[in-house]
Image (cartoon, rainbow, N blue to C red; front, side):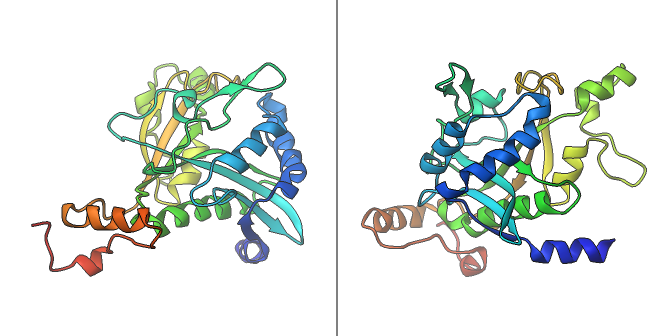
Length: 266
């Protein structure tokens, strides 16, 4: 079974999305979120593709392709994130606005290319258990890892939570206790947290009414964070020159930790 999954992963290619992919993306969106009545219209996906980008349109919107068919997608945006003061709701994190159908959706209006964290707005796959979601999540982690010198410090996940269903069977368990619960094998009880922890995400907190649109989860959301350990930050002695060069259109970056070895901020 493991060899079969490994082979399947090798056959999946992840690339940036384009406007031509939107119809196939919406088919996956309908399949993934239709059963829980949480589908966003095509105009939302179109907005994200066009407006929520790091350097060029589409670079924060990825699709997984196998045998020339799109089998999954993941769409992100850049936000300013403080782990000591995380957003209380998904609306606060990404920004909502009214669509042509008169309803409000998470378009991603709070996208800030100068922020410090990649926040994924949604992910969808055609088939479960094929490693598609894992490959897409890994792509976003790699993106943050590779852009630490551009200021990306975190990959933030505002996850749907299984707490509402769990607490019906275990009424004495608090939200704070729930996000710490482990199975006998040491893995998280919560399925979404279990998936993300494989990539090094750590639980931060749990929020009530984080996503009221999620009727199945009754709005509960878990916030998990992957921290870029190679993130350098803004050294006082380097911030001015690097920023100046970038404003002049010249490629510039902060040094890696290895390059800074032996130096101090003084």
